[in-house]
Length: 92
Image 1: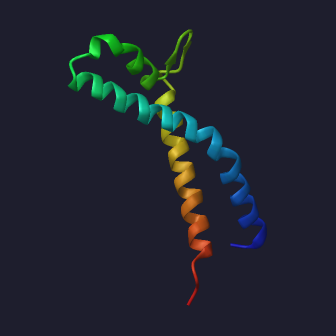
Image 2: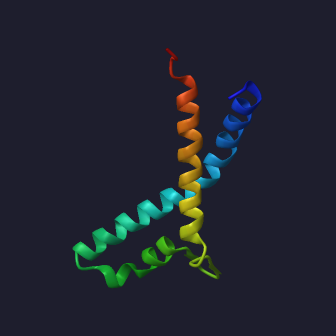
């Protein structure tokens, strides 16, 4: 990969990481907390966590695209991260 593509790849990763990490963290945290509520027998009191987990934010309902956004974002960060890692490894 030439130098221009390397710079572009790092800029792409740098710009999209903050946008993509928030929904991923929100999904992980709300899913974990809701599971704790289920285990403790309090799931009925924490349905709002499940709604956040699925992408329903009050009037904004993203349930249809939220999983695809999370999946695409994770894939994008993974691919750009691995490509950057492969470029920094010592070559034989």
